[in-house]
Length: 196
Ligand code: HEM
Image 1 (cartoon, rainbow, N blue to C red):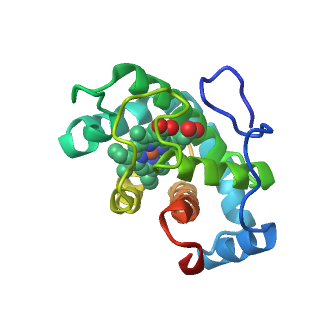
Image 2 (spheres, protein in one colour):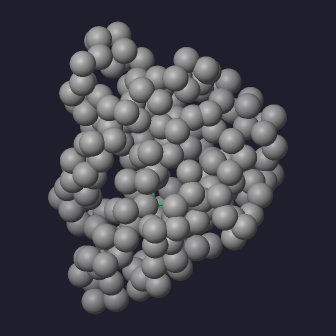
């Protein structure tokens, strides 16, 4: 989805370069995490469940970051204090990302933007869209390790609905697969081409 109201959110715009992999290669990656049409449907269901809870989800994730100085560090300004403006701007895009994660099927615009999100976590582009003065790179080990909290914490929000336990479970697994898929794509700028 494209939205020009969110600062720095450039999904689907001409500014975003084409992905370095084809849709066929992307399809193989989807198969590798067992992501199929059912997952697409369950993510759409998850999108409906999460829509009114996005701020609460973000409160949990931002609270988790705030509780750990070594994570806040990536959002700190030149004086070492949390850069509230940077945090707020990223938060808006994070909220939109929840919607984009649930808005399936994933097309070329979605794939292209994954590589942009990857770049924005690295020296290639971190701080740029928000003109922030923070450290210029997020170490990859934290990106990978974040898969767990970003996945585990979503379950209670998915369960806060009228859906059956089986549906909640299916939404949860679809979400988990999508996060693994996305972080895999985001690892691209961290790894030499011939190893990726
Ligand atoms: C940006 C998600 C890991 C810090 C973003 C954005 C999203 C996101 C959706 C905004 C993308 C956009 O610009 O449209 C995630 C997810 C992660 C993850 C799902 C892991 C599963 C981390 C970690 C840190 C971090 C470990 C470090 C504490 C940041 C920062 C930005 C950002 C500082 C702003 C980058 C910029 O300057 O443009 N992240 N992130 N992220 N994330 Fe992450």
